Image (cartoon, rainbow, N blue to C red; front, side, top):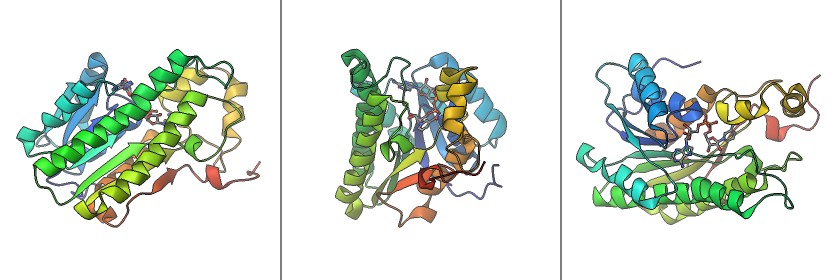
Length: 268
Ligand code: NAD
C-alpha cells in the first residue's frame, strides 16, 4: 500500500518517536523513501537496531537514517534528541508518536495512580516535550516552516465501553494541546496536527488482544470495513501532514479510521 516515492520530504530533517515499532517504523520507512533525513527514536535500543536494519533495507542507499535512545517521558532525553539534529541543520518535522496503553489501565474505580501517572508521563508529557524542544529548535535555526504531528487516537473523539481511562484521557490531552499549539504558532509557520488512528494491527493492540476472539470481535464489529487498520495506512497520512502538500492543514484532528467514528450500524 506504499505509493511510489516522489521526494515529498526532500531536504527535510525529521524525528520520529516510538520509531522501533508499529506506526513509527512504517513512517520511518516512508519518510526515508520520500527523501527525508530521519532520526529514529525509541526507548528500546534492541528494537531500534532491528528497525534500523529494516528501514535501511527499504530506503535508498543515499538516505540518512540514524537512531537515538530516548525515553520521551524524560525532558533531558527529548532535549538531547532534538539538539542532536542541530548538526544536521535543525529539525523540520517531528512525529511525536511514542505512546503506551497499559494492560492494567481500567475504569474510574480500578485505574491506579501509578498507571495514570505512567501513561500521562509518556503519552502527554512526552508529546509536550517533543513540541517544546522542536519549537525551540525551529526558532534557533530561523526556520519559517515546520510540521509537528502528534499521535492521539479515536478514543479522544468517541467513548469506548471497553475502558482504558488513563489512556483515553491522555489522548484527549494530546488532541487539545495540539490544537492550541497550532493556533499559538501559526504565524511562525509551524503547523501542528493530531493523528487519530483507529485500532490497528500493531503489537500495541494485538499483543493485548492475543487469541481472545470475543475481545477481538467486540472491536472489529464497529468497523464499516470489517477490519482493523494497518500501520502503513497511518504512515501514509503522516507523510502528507509532514509535507508541504499540507501547507494549509493546521490544528486538525486527522482521523484515519476507515469510517469507524462516523458509523452507527455497520454492514453485516
Ligand atoms: P507500538 O507499541 O507498536 O509502538 C510504540 C513504540 O513506542 C514502541 O517501539 C515502544 O518501544 C515505544 N515507546 C514506548 N514507550 C516509550 C517511551 N517512553 N519513549 C520512547 N519510546 C517509547 O505502538 P503503535 O500501535 O505503533 O502506536 C503508536 C502510537 O499510536 C501510540 O501513541 C499509540 O497510542 C497510538 N495509537 C495506536 C493504536 C493502535 O491500535 N495500535 C490506535 C490509536 C492510537
